Image (cartoon, rainbow, N blue to C red):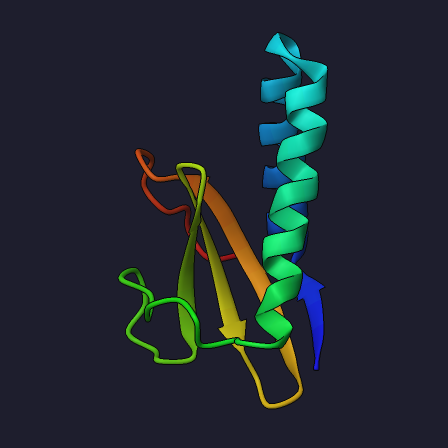
Length: 95
């Protein structure tokens, strides 16, 4: 199984990391590294997190990490990381 990141996820993660970097560069780097470690653990347990409360699809899950929701979709051979957003913000429209 492989993990792929959507363009939307990459853009939003970059924006979040840049925002954190304004206050603390090391915290920004640490945030991204720790998030990537959590995401990579999905290979072993893709159903570890609850079904998404934003989508009516049992293959779409919500991972919560340091106040952010990471939405991902499970396929038979891959996991696609769809989105990351602050839990206080509404989910963005589909691409």
